[in-house]
Length: 333
Image (cartoon, rainbow, N blue to C red):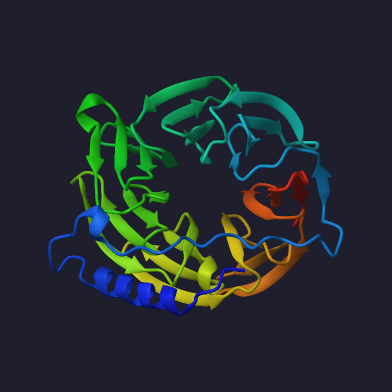
């Protein structure tokens, strides 16, 4: 489990002060801004209980996404994004080759997937066809569907840029973060996770600028957004999940989640937030009706549950093992 020592606490205080100044003065050069070492998932022990549901053999990987239109699951592994049909059990339906292991796969509105793969942005259509959308001169860490003002896709890079892709008039580059680690989008509202600054920042894509930055504990790693615009930010470094709204952009709750929380997703039908715990090989569901998380379900997982995706139609929760323990399908209704 990630621990914060005295030196990192000093760095965290310096970082908090720097973030507090956002909007009050000019932004320092990227190389001059204080940073932290990003939190990492705990090294999971051997499971103490059999994983719930059904486990399909699969290579090690760290990325899952579910396409509710085509009803397919995409899984990142070394050298490919593997596609599975899900109804009647997981069945491999195709492979989209990538240069090494991709950084992220996300569902695309209307069906298919977007992939952040090294310095490329890729699209996988509903029938499994792979199409390169663009190549950038930095490692692409994150992608998001964004269909506004001629833009179709957003990409975040390791050197802190958010790039909008689409029509030539919509192509632009927005700077501000040290690292654009993860993008979350709801309609035309966008926020970016910066793991190296432990922050969540508004992005004005139309205006080509960033907005306010909010400090997220001492180690934000992953984030998800629900249809209501609530952002669920996993602070692995402090064993907690922090909830925000994207409009207005503000914190709503802070809730402890022990066991090195890592992956997060939302079931919009059951209205449950799902979070994996890598230190205990578990996935846990929380209801949010009261405004604060309330634990509702907990299931044993495959070892090292570093990736998660939810099928909101059936309630099936998919968990991927980063150590080669397969992909797990957990029925939750």
